[in-house]
Length: 335
Ligand code: KG4
Ligand code: ZN
Image 1 (cartoon, rainbow, N blue to C red):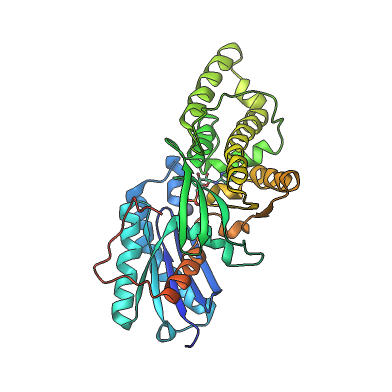
Image 2: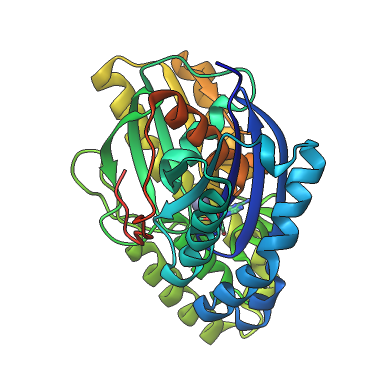
């Protein structure tokens, strides 16, 4: 069999992305970020769908050009089926279906969260099975037991907000511009993580709760600004560092427990929040302390991108796991 050449499309949220992969090697990965949401302080679903429609043809064209691949050389077309915003997913799904139909090649439907984890197979070093992956994004917070490329089990997850939401909402309360997570990360780097203490919800097993910290930050800011109206401006770096420290400590506490219970020393992180510099540094410290092998994706593969969708599609192609023209988006697609 010649090496499969796959075009992959990602459109689950506010990034329109297309990538080409050949024989498991990513040849191109084009990402168009939608600036339109900035002035609203968050992603506006209807605007995201429209921006995807505008971006998708130029982004796919660029991905094929950069890879130096013509559409007639493609073995399959892949798209993100879910989870994500319905209208946004529809754009990628419809485009991929038309493209596959026009070229008479197979269609592959990819789970976005599985793809975040499979981003670890784009470059070396690659984790060994079984490994634990802390998957942290704007919509998800999960500890996943990864038994094989396409065999994964969620062993713990958030019962309310995702950790990315906790980052974004705290940033918004502090008046930081959208997208909040990376801004909070930057400010935290200049602050003292032990300056303030925030309580964290303690859930049983490997589960999480992140809605409480949002409320405690809100009350904390309300009380402190009553005493000093300039409290936020004067302490922004320390507040960011303290919130970030609390979130990271909470995330990793359950991972430590899971590695002990399951006897696994291979630990990976994935998803948008894995771009957080504090989380990356703390994971390295834990690697030394607990004798783990840790896997941290390159920045470009942390946040949403089509290269990870292409990687997942590659494994699905080899397994013969294809979709039909009846495929439709699944905004709440499970792992
Ligand atoms: O995976 P992703 O790009 O999209 C989803 O699938 O949700 O993740 C986006 C999330 C947002 O909450 C964003 O604020 C967060 O990842 N994020 C960060 C950082 N970079 C992105 N959070 C903290 N620190 C960062 N450096
Ligand atoms: Zn994502």
